[in-house]
Length: 475
Image (cartoon, rainbow, N blue to C red):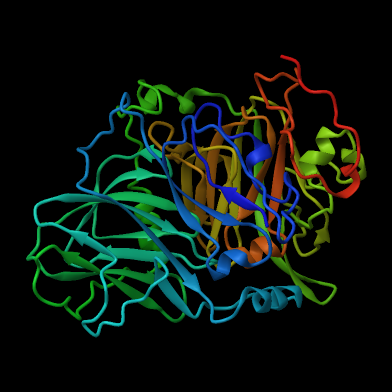
């Protein structure tokens, strides 16, 4: 099993030896264990962790992770009365081995069977235990994360509004929302004030962009309250255009302090010249009778030797080739080949990545090791003229971005964090069947200022197993 920690930050982040994905780490053998060690620096916020092997995530292999601000760094809101984590997601009525067999046979998972809130679903019979308790007149922080396998969810609190304050580690402008679309892999932090009649209320999660809407509820109980929650649930939004418009309301809080006592907005990303543009188009094709998902005509396959280990040991040429996909989608996207995909990125280059979705299903992408600025999103195909509508001032710094059907999304980032970093679909059947790649960022100086040495006790496998360790970086 290998697990991934979703990270965020503007300066140095976690090193890729601790990323916990198959491109950097060998799987942990059954009955064995491995301890990841990393320094928490500027990744303040709400995150999730989960295994990236097979389909373990789909049957409960996930959890929440909080990184709190130091007392030296004030947050732009009063301390809440309590701090709650709400993990919502879809589920399937099959075990992880059965789900894996479906994918290995060349099919996708289809629609989910249900939705859960912290692993539970309220029955609504008046006997449900509360997920959370609130006291009238007090304000509570809820960290809401979509830990599901493939389904976007809308979350809303019966009779209460949500004030959005954080998104994947960044403070946001504090707008009020009746409901929020949370796409797979995303985390939002909201403040909810207990300002209603003291009794029970529902927190509601329902599927989005699916032919059949699935809804689940959990109980929020007022302290000393009397009365069951009303059966009249707040309605969900309709259509994906609503969700696109909601994205456009998200703004970075430029005056809020970041991980250090300096404003988030002190990083002027909008004034940096773009040095490389990469446009990625996702496709679905049948290859040798089985379904595969691809990016720019290549469907990713896992080599037996992790990419980062092969690179570090100097045997990369025996495991993969760099830049196996072009920076532009091929004119004929119906041809798909199977291979590891590794983009060779220049250290500290400022890069624009465009995600184009020509399919009818929503996409969700996560980039390990970095945060990026989600500067644009719209329907149709991307063209250079679209840059005129980019948000170059206060786009939220985040690490997961959705791409709506027949639409595009654009992100900007500096590849200043050396390592081997996974860019993947968070839609897990797509991830499993090839819709992912890695970005290799190598320091030309081989310096400890840029990247850590191979940790002691790290698991080795594939062709590097038994090879002598390369000499460490010296400075």
